[in-house]
Image (tube, rainbow, N blue to C red):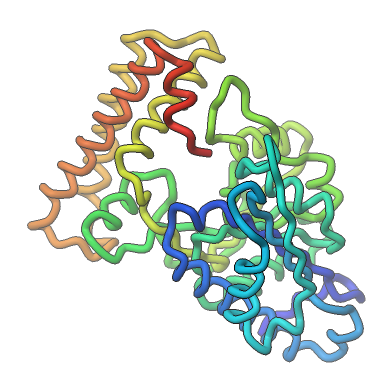
Length: 333
């Protein structure tokens, strides 16, 4: 196993896990993630003599205390992590009000974390073998500040394979390299603590739900901080569980971002729709074999693409007409 030592000192690692996505994804995925996290962390401990001297890993779990009770969450975590959880200092942190939003939960956990490295992982992703070593090993270079992993859609049926081809997550890479990147995904990324404390996830204006990670990536680049992507640090992600809600939310966010930039127009909305449909269909036709999609299923995948982008256009147009209604009715991070 590759070393995850930092110069002469072993890295102190804090994991920050939001319990928000459990509401919409299968709890079984979260349980599997916890088991894998415990096993991979335990393997690192066993592989490095003297690890016990640095203490345990930290695991911060952030949840909405207005809707959830901490004891059932703790019971799930301890049961799934089993004997390996002795390596983790577990802290459950309830958030209320504006702090219960997805990105705010991550910021809240980071403020309390004591590790040299902050590893952000979501409750609906499942790490692949070698994920944790792939995420931590680059930090042996003291000049590396931010490492994003690879997140791909788990291609277990036609619906998932289609989203794997056209949604914003890239396909599962075949290589295992470290390279410079323009962005990262908030569900699978690690920062040096001081960098993240200086550059937390920024608030999104005007009710926009998604995109804080893209804004943070731009902020990091503007401040001369290079983002790296470790393709060996892979996690699988489910397709959106709520097709209609996700599409409408995507359209709403697009309109709000364009409104902020002062470029919103009906022509722009229609142009975006045509471009997105063209690119998505091209990806399906060109790369369907990469997700084990047979040619006979391509027409079905194209129908999914058309339906999703059409609903997204509806969400954008509805936001033009009734932005406050859309902000309140499509409540998604």
